[in-house]
Image 1 (cartoon, rainbow, N blue to C red):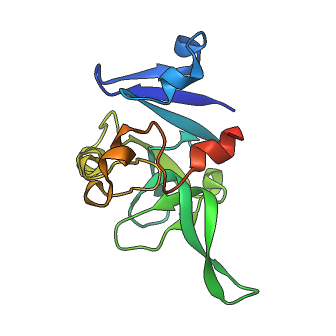
Image 2 (image 1 turned 30 degrees about the vertical axis):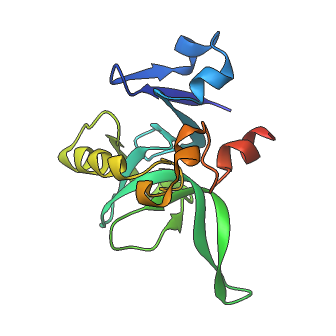
Length: 163
């Protein structure tokens, strides 16, 4: 799988080639944030990673691409159920599966590099959370949670890596 890494200390995006000789455990611990590729691209041809921001070409809000657990409606069972994967999150809207963004979305930047005022606002909001994948709030986390390199709530990285 492709990924890139945000260096929170130096405020710099590192590409996979930049860190290819680093131990994976280093990439999974502060000050680094590992951003997995969704394997999809926007209508303007840009590959989408967790933390990217997209906007529908038709209308609608700025959406943050996240990787983790979210609630999705199951038409067969007629209720919401927990689902794991890439999804789009926007203020005031239910989380939704990513789908095929090459048909509907343009790339607007990402929450780390702050390429737009909206991206900067979302990045500032992340300071309230321990886990950038599931948005586990700091006030709900205990000291043990803060010392782990993985979130004990979402376990997404462990599932992806088979750990």
